[in-house]
Length: 81
Image 1 (cartoon, rainbow, N blue to C red):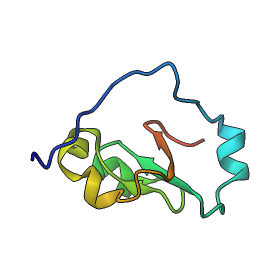
Image 2: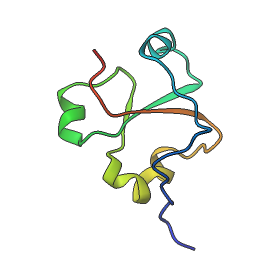
Image 3: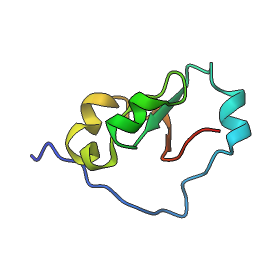
Image 4: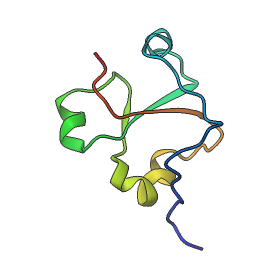
């Protein structure tokens, strides 16, 4: 069994959260925020509480960073301004 995950880049059935919805839920422990930008960008600034998982590392490290596959996970790849 491979330790890598299959990564789909697009799916019509995956809902999107607006900036306002994310701001309202920043302290919601059921929402996991994942910053997929490079680590240098994450270090320069990210949403408080967000995890760093650069997009290139998702296939190899997603299972260790995000072990609960049933969790509500929101991924972002732009500055949160």
